[in-house]
Image 1 (cartoon, rainbow, N blue to C red):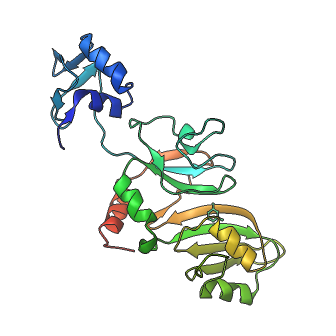
Image 2: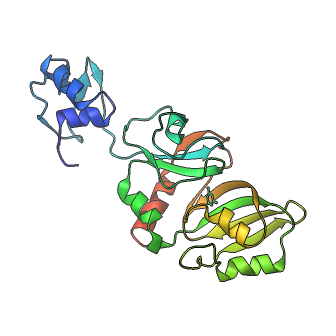
Image 3: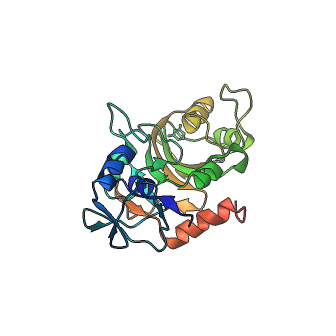
Length: 244
Ligand code: URA
């Protein structure tokens, strides 16, 4: 890993603002490899150097990845002045620069990846990547073969271009049909707008998968956990174009 300034090292780990930390370093409260640090611009090699603030060791973490089962009623944003955000639900983390990869509507539940890996987020969200997203959707009314076909052909939802083809699979048909819907874009309110264009409405929406990452069924609504090594590897393979 590239060397980084001491004040950035500590700020990245959420130990305080850069200006607070500069003062703490100047006050002699920070040790590097057991020696009191003198200047905030001292270069730290995160792989080798040991940094402590007020005697407490602070290890450096470059990237963090969490899977959250987003509950309804919470905003897919990093912070908001009034409303609770998905980041308020990630109680224990090291990095202060976490963000949600993409957005789910406030009333949508399910899989949300929270990370500080901007390159990965860029790949997952890039419109040209066509990463599949699968949702569980409860709809008003029964699903007809015409609706399945409309999803499969791509739909006019009022944008300049038709949507890419999607897949509407019936799990349980009836007055409140239960379905799984897979799309490969991320347009604003896309599932709700596609449902409307197919003369139905979404009563409940939950994201199940995004690319190779699928919601852990053991994660309760509102709960989160770090990604496993296998999940991280699957996402890295996607970034390297090895899978889509
Ligand atoms: N489509 C929607 O309409 N809402 C979401 O939250 C996600 C996809």
